[in-house]
Amino acid sequence: MAKSPILEIKDLHAKAGDKEILRGINLTIYPGEVHAIMGPNGSGKSTLSQVIAGRDLYEATKGEIIYEGEDLLELDPEERAQKGIFLAFQYPVEIPGVSNLYFLKAALNAIRKQKGEPEVDAMEFFNLVRQKMSIMEMDESLLNRAVNTGFSGGEKKRNEIFQMAVLEPRLALLDETDSGLDIDALKVVSSGVNALRSPDRAILVITHYQRLLNHIVPDFVHVLAEGRIVKSGGKELALALEESGYAGLEEFAEIAR
Amino acid sequence: MIMETVSGLSELRKRAAEQFESQGYPTTRNEEWRFTNIAPIVKAQFPVAAPVVAGPSLKDALEADPELIEAHLGRYASTADNPFVALNTAQFEDGAFVQVPANTVLPEPIDIEFKALQGRTTHPRTLIVVGPNSQVQIIERYSGAGKYFTNAVTEIVVGENSIVEHIKLNEESREAFHVATIQARLGRNANFKQHNVTLGGALVRNDINAVLSTGSEGTVNGFYFANGKQHIDNHTAIDHAEAYAASHELYKGILDGHSTAVFNGKIYVRKDAQKTDAKQTNKNLVLSENASINTKPELQILADDVRCTHGATVGQLDQEALFYLQARGINKDEARNLLIYAFARDVIERMGVERIRQYLEKALFEVLTHKSFAESA
Ligand SMILES: Nc1ncnc2c1ncn2[C@@H]1O[C@H](COP(=O)(O)OP(=O)(O)OP(=O)(O)O)[C@@H](O)[C@H]1O
Ligand SMILES: [Mg+2]
Image (tube, rainbow over all chains, first blue to last red; front, side):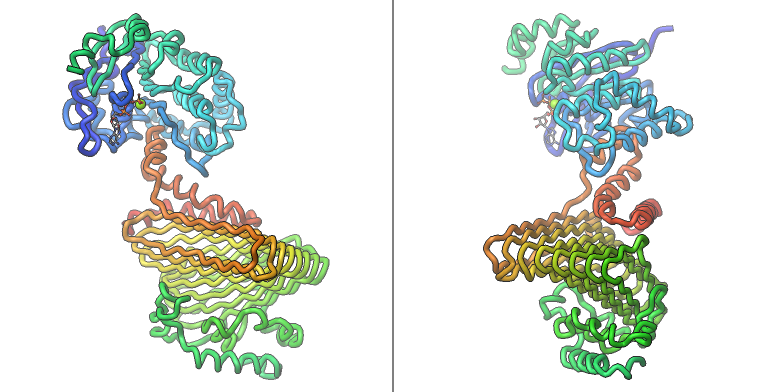
């Protein structure tokens, strides 16, 4: 039996207010694959990830997103998450007054509920969290602090991947998870991501840097510019970009014209 | 009526009655009442009745030891400045009395509960006198059903070097009128904490006043949660009468439906009150576009070597935070409640009585989950 895609984006257009940001995105991702999206600042990478996650700030004006055969644009953000989509935010949000632990448990239970599973029991949750924290080399004291509140940039990014490790999504979207990480943290975060790689999951990483892709080796690399994917290729494309920059791309020159 | 046998007290009451006569009910032309129109209270004219109090009764104490009461009652809350205090002083029939002798630590909080009578006006009067080097926690709670008017006055004397925590819970009915003054006098090096929680009442006005002596520390915190057509007005006045005193104030409010709220925070620093350290914060979370808050600090600083800070915020639910929670699978309603709850939490957590904290967390949770928001939206 041929595999069917986990995510299919067809001619997606999206805007925020009057501003058109995505102008015809086409992207198909199969289970087991890792895709990387690169592209200059402001090209629409975060917007794409937020539209997939369901942020209502953005309106999809044309095209469609099919997730595991289902029309994703019809679903609320929480339904998308419950069905296995996870977005690691470029800028994780601080939520004073809500403890990280409480938050994570609520998230895990929401997903379990959707699957028809009972709420996680206290001991099981504790063990799960302990295990994932040690993989992420995170200080346990972060658990009792308010979500991302007062976390350093690196701690916030680790916390995103830690959440992902606990929630075990089917489709993970990582928006510049590598930005602001020192080399040791980058290794830890990358191994957290790689641990999730499996034949029935897919990962989409957004990054500016080849160094992340040394650790999380992609199957495909796409270049986004002005709301469109202007070039796709294998992992060697990222290396070429590192050499010559976006301006060196023929497709770029075309847009600039 | 009672206490006519106590000559000093009857004198005080007579004078209060005269003061009320000459002042009359306040109108919105009075700066202090500018945003709170009490006309519905005047119009209702509920007949006066004796309050129903569970706890140590003031009336009993008056009968047992009139001189003791007379030495304090009416000596702190001014009948000249606030007509409702004058009215209470002139007409009260009962209330509560707590006395803590010197060098005494009470292990358990004292509960005082006023249950209002439908269709009646009551003037609960409470006197709390704590001697030097003592420690006590007191919970004053107001509740009732239907329409009525509660006009309460509480006077608190905190002896030198004593620690007093006072919690007031307003859980009046949604149709009730509630006007109350809490007047505290802090002795040297005393530590006084007041938590003023308003959940109920159609029309509510609180005046929380504290006068600080040398080296004392006063904390006045408040939480209000207004919905429907509720109007909640909190006026606080911290009087740094002497040097080296510190005051901390945090008032937080949640406003939904068509509710309105007022926060007015006065800080007086007298001429000799050098090294005063005063901090005031008012934060509001406005959930509905039909709800509004009027917030105003009023600082009057006559000393020069002081530190005074104040700040007020009025904001909506953080949409970024809401999306972040939803993006982790948490339903929008639940996410919303979580954020509202998180906003309120730090004022509740500052209360030193665990059962009250738990009670309020539960009460808040119930208000949030019983869809009163959806109804009012
Ligand atoms: N809510 C919004 N309202 C208006 N404009 C927006 C909004 N969100 C994004 N934009 C604009 O859309 C464009 C794409 O933004 P986006 O954040 O998707 O870029 P990006 O590729 O992720 O950039 P970076 O590499 O800097 O993270 C930018 O010009 C940005 O200013
Ligand atoms: Mg971005």
